Length: 248
Image 1 (cartoon, rainbow, N blue to C red):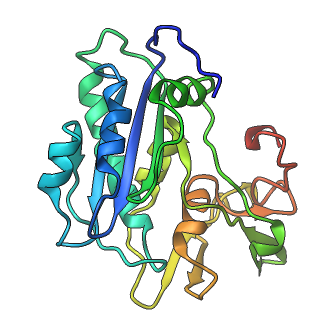
Image 2 (image 1 turned 45 degrees about the vertical axis):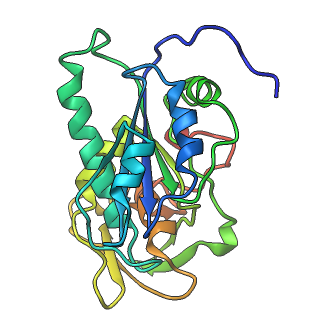
């Protein structure tokens, strides 16, 4: 790797949000990774979906790790509620910390990770790369895998994406605010339609669980940006993937 060996300058804060089951793998590797992070450059938050999670082992290996209260979760059916829980706790922490930091206004990125992930680059490289801009990062899947429906004679699509996303602070705040209810046991979740056509109507789209319709592969994007429509009055409109959503 061609690594940048310049001293690391403060650009903002990275929040590492780990979703783990009964165990957090590779904690020693992660501890070495975070040891390069100066104080105030990164936070580490962990949500354990199992009561068997070895909290002491993780805290001993990664002293800066903080655990959040367990939220309702079920693989594929609802991993979104724990994601929202992690974001809310991280946001609350930085609201308090900003008043005590020299840099009161700074960019932030919120990174969703699994308990089996491994860092393949040093902290300094990840830090510099993610804070080069203030964009959120979604890995969108092919349009053929999006889910479509018709609402009031408008063709609408639900964007499918990889569940491990990176959010900037404004998008993180929207997600934390708008995702309020866990996925129902029936497998249904909903979000309010946006865009000029629906701006004065409380129209919700309900999504039912199927084997190819895990909530965390749709709900983060949909909660923040809404549904995608073929016309500008129903949503974002279809965008070339090389363009920022805000410009479409």
